[in-house]
Length: 159
Image (cartoon, rainbow, N blue to C red; front, side):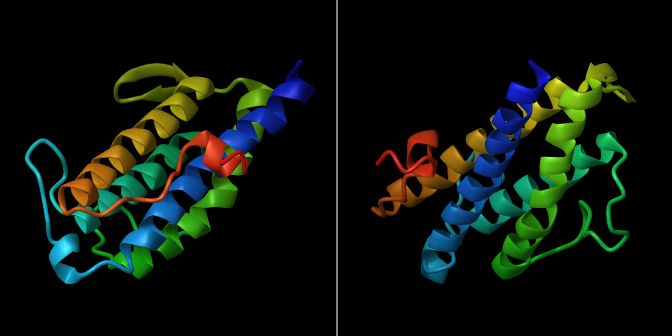
């Protein structure tokens, strides 16, 4: 079973990186006015939302105790959209390693929130990414801009 599960989880984390980078790439082409739009209940503007998302993705990796580069920007590091995209690109392969580790060892972590299995961290990664990409899509929609499709079907070439 583990042999069949590993490529599935790797595909899922690759999808997460692809979806964030695809939507971010689209947003990088938008006007400063569009990018400056914000909404209550989210993380503010489109750049602020992506910054939160990439920093959270990086922080979630920390529980896997991978050999992460020491120079990865952490939570308080300001980044522009190009820097955010570059960070998503850098951490993508580490998420693939984390997915493989989750299958191979079913790692259990002690966190400030308690004990958690590696699969739950992967579930949080996917859910968190989906929620914030939806917020960005909503901000674009309010501006009258149709965002690209970044669902699983689009990733799999089914659209």
